[in-house]
Image 1 (cartoon, rainbow, N blue to C red):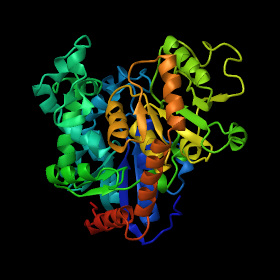
Image 2 (tube, rainbow, N blue to C red):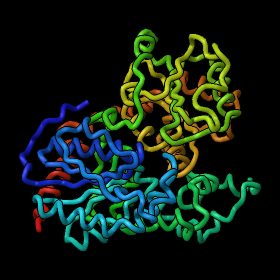
Image 3 (cartoon, helix red, strand yellow):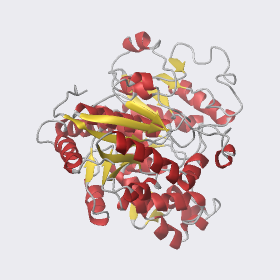
Image 4 (cartoon, one colour):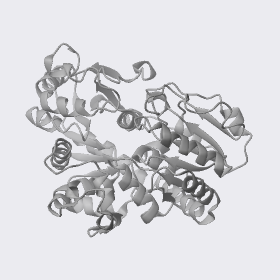
Length: 460
């Protein structure tokens, strides 16, 4: 990974960053903060107490908790007991957070010279707050450009009646989406919308609208991966876009909300190159016990060595591995609760990644040239899975549920398919070239720093 050093002294310029409090959103925002710090900017992180980052890992940043500091507030009590997977918190804070955020920003503007605010795109209410303070707001979008373009097309999909289809209308569900022929109609349904006017649809619509109103968009991606999508974005959303592959600059280990197991590394170090399957379905996904057992049987039946991340709470109704018979895995695999994922993917023993196709995991795999088996659940995951399997062709989709025979077959195919492996290797090489002087990533990062420096410093 690139050794980041301070290149320009912007210490009199402060950037305020406001991540969404979920692992897949915290990681890229804190990686971005580190990158901007390395460019010489001072960094302040606003955060909720819910899923607060480990501030001791970032002594070079200033942290300030906002929005959920008064749990007795009746607006927040109905979500106080909700778990990691609940996005009700996002909807609620978008609805009620403006006044409190404005007060916090006014204090920060009085205390120091602020260049801009960078928020997660899903904090769409922050655009009106920034506008009221004449403070430039950039957004970090933690999904792909391809996914964002699809989110922007939700009104079109609604007009076409896609969201009204039911699971028993199989022929229609298997049809291609006319505007995005790499997708099937069932992928649109898996995004999780009932219509453009339901709670999720309205939130995404507001996110798209306020992203278009922002001063710029920062993407965890590269031009070489999504060039056609970048051209569409620049046409439809005429604000500056900056594509930066965060995993190639810094790891996300320090922002992990879960403790990371490293005890398996001595075992991994002894495995031959490209011989181990890495399996992880992210920080939020849950499965039924019967599906968990199908996954376990598929892994063992594949006869491939594996590292399997089973997060506590991953199996509905179980604390951890209670449904699995003792000794079932044997010596062919290791089951752990959480790992430093980027470090695992970069290990030469890893031959493939079986993933839920969240964008962070997908892009980290691309960055390390690791082929993928995609088992998407909802949201952007089905879209990422199709892009990987149908556009870049560096992975395959498992789309017919959890069947041990299909699982074992997919594992064997991806672990042994040299064409998929070669395509993944070539894509990684393109990414690596983009990092050197004159490359797209190098220039995008310099452009972002210069753009932020062009804003007049704000103080009150």
